[in-house]
Image 1 (cartoon, one colour):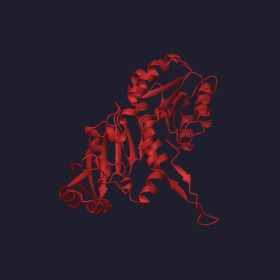
Image 2 (cartoon, rainbow, N blue to C red; image 1 turned 30 degrees about the vertical axis):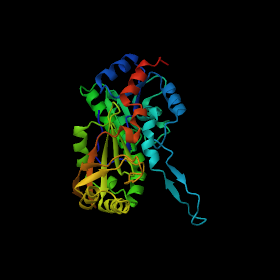
Image 3 (cartoon, rainbow, N blue to C red; image 1 turned 90 degrees about the vertical axis):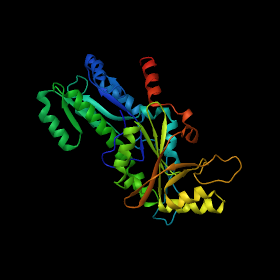
Image 4 (cartoon, rainbow, N blue to C red; image 1 turned 120 degrees about the vertical axis):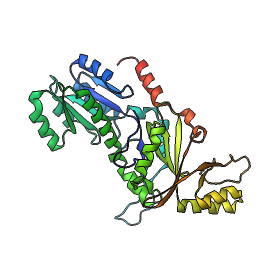
Length: 339
């Protein structure tokens, strides 16, 4: 398992849980053995119990949530301003329960308590992807449900490639879950200074990074601006991304504070990006401020000119020692008592 970005970058991504509902407990026991071992499945033989738990868990319609709030001042009686707390996006990584968020349900059509389509109708979260498992006799019903938008995929249980198709469907629907939920954030940030989220030139850049560093989590960060990437063990990298305007701002601040010539030259030319250890991501002349690291940069032209670099050794900067990694969380779920 690693992140995939097929339709643009998302401002946040992390592994989520797939709920599987089938009244045949033997089938429920076999399926996890045939999927990606890092794919978290939560199985139910009772659809009513599954629905009850999903409602009790109150799966968030926007993953992470809590970063959008009403601004205190109103421009007019008929208008309201909304504020976006971007820092809270990265703080999501400190919430161990993030991995328990349900993004996909896989449900059998033929069950005695409730059929699969009725189950899908009763789901409250519109972002959750729905996969229906069918028999041959259910094809017409499944096609009608797919065409109406009630389900997103249907797979015959007797298909020789059923497990491959199920794995592909889960990955695609989990990706779509975050694309839909993060669309507003991406569009709002692009109206400001964070343009790369909506710029297609960065999709292959991130794909290349993920070939070298198999991240399973991704969080937008500003000051410094870029993407914080975490792998399944909680190790991190930071894809530092600066525009020409960003570098000019950094240059002015660093110059006013008497930064070394090496730092000023790099900021002016964009050949290397300084990694400032200060909390706000800018140069600091305070006593005891961390030394500036110079990271070789690559320049890329898209809707803007960008300069980017992959930064390692970021655990201290982002407090990664306090983060519960995905692999650790999976072990804790395996060790937890049943029920």
